[in-house]
Image 1 (cartoon, rainbow, N blue to C red):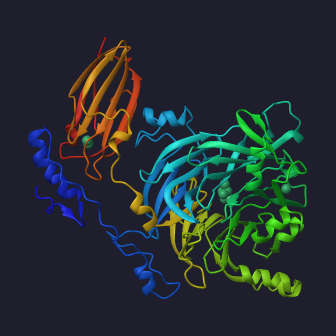
Image 2 (spheres, rainbow, N blue to C red):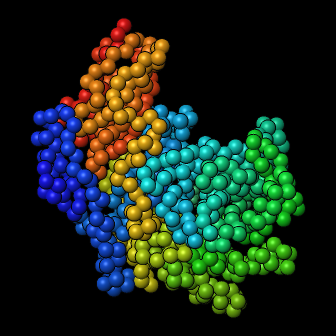
Length: 620
Ligand code: CUK
Ligand code: CUA
Ligand code: CA
């Protein structure tokens, strides 16, 4: 076959490929000549070409057939336990990355490789996805996501878009806010814990000895560096753009265990953690080791690591503006946002000013403000849960009005626009907004309820994620997108940052068990069956084992063509997984049922895909 004939845009298209394989592969069954796969050319649509041409506030959100999106959206999948990749602005779902869930499509939680990471756990509740940074912008290396149920943090390699590490963090419950270091690069990740528990977890501990913790994780080693123990719970997390501080909102400084106790105080705090002082405490050995983790006592009066800035009671999100100047707390119970001037924090830590003096504005937003994002042009946009709105407001105007006094302030000069959304919004996020390259193009409103927005699919409705054009002064709703259980947060990363990092095939020998020669090996009752997979054949057409053997299948896909994955399912043995190009996957089970069992390819790969199978004969 001529390479050129079946290639379009530098990529072998499926139709041309299948035609070719149908002829060559079918006849031979032997090794086929695989055309050299070529990277598809980048730029099926130049980034922003159309938007620049259009008027402000009228960007084109339609992505035509064959065109690419401008942004990768990385979505937390809530208690589906997964991460989703959604193209922006089309809102097309491109991929699901299984993380804490069991997923029979890919075999996540079924293969030995994934089981080693999951360690028997089968549920997860992802809330916050963030990328690794260099100099305040994503570096396209990793994504990090938390599990609130089992208190784990997972790392996704961007090159394979696959989880490579999962860390279970001891001493905490309700792992919630997570934010990576933004400057100079991501060495640490700051993680908050929403539920207070005894540390160590002694069932007889009195309520006043329930603590929260700010956990620092080493991003490269995926190990806990330390925990700072505080008396309050810690909710959302943020980091600055200098590598000096991390932030945590708290809503239970009361150390309550009932809802009325948690609402008793008239204010709560934004906690600021001083990273230099954390390092000093670790160096000086000022910590206790609990369950193998260095725990620093950060309670009020016990250390100078934590600064507590009073904010209206029960706040929720904390987000840092892309210019690095402000940390904005969303009020939740209070209808306001609190703007903290980060340049004042050093003086507050040094005791030169009171923590409250770091607050430079407390503008009115609406009923139930939850999360704030930024357009990179000095405006903040805050999600408002009870009002079901996105409120765009100007940070500088809010600070001016605060200075000018109550007469000016009550006119709300900071408010730029209010958009009704549908309905009950949680997180919102603008494109690149958690980086210093916030570009103010698109915003996604992650609404908790869709109510009447879609045809009825039964009592459990989809959530509704709405795409908003924020390029003009007004917020302009352009698209509704239903999603399944139950996204919390998202980041949207420019395509040119991610795309060059993403690979078309695995590095075959990164997997220590990569199969180059098919065969069966027996050691006592342990039988290893090694298979190559080349469309449309596995390296063996049959294998024999004995009842009671512990059988391991190891399969390596030798097809290097982009998009050519094989599957491996074993009838009646509850096994299926997918093997992408040059990947190796393995599974181990006990052959407890004698008989003939067909293993077959589940991922359509060839005109003779249905013939891609082999027998496992389990002798009695
Ligand atoms: S939390 Cu869900 S709406 Cu877990 Cu970020 Cu605010
Ligand atoms: Cu291999 Cu289908
Ligand atoms: Ca409270």
